[in-house]
Length: 155
Image 1 (cartoon, rainbow, N blue to C red):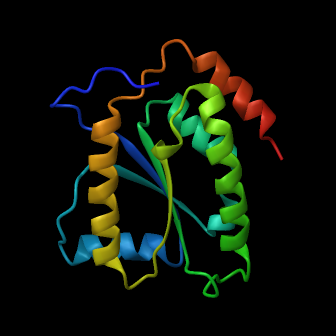
Image 2: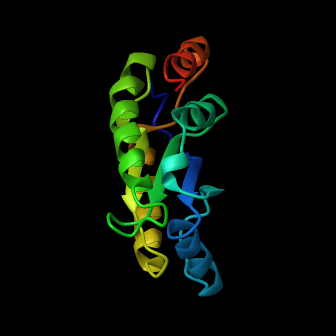
């Protein structure tokens, strides 16, 4: 459910990052003074397997235009299979989002190791451009539907 595609639109992105890999990559990007769009606000979780679908719906409900999930590469999870659990939930959320007026392209999942700060920079830049094409998430009429979505995905 996009609104107008204004040229001065700057999307708000909520990033939910694994502590051990993606969050460390974000930290490395910051300490290395790498430039990437300031649109990203990061929430750290101990493992991507702990990302609850409710977190994603909450972010959208509260003004995010996009949500970026990021965790360890397959086989590198500190909690063995947390990233596998994250992938399953991601696929579920991608199917559910259109039912509530949210384009599935507004949710993205990436595997980023602690040393891949440059990859993180590129991913954020690409995601900002994709969201600019989609335009702002116009939520005025579907907020109630998102609340219902949160109820449906409770695990």
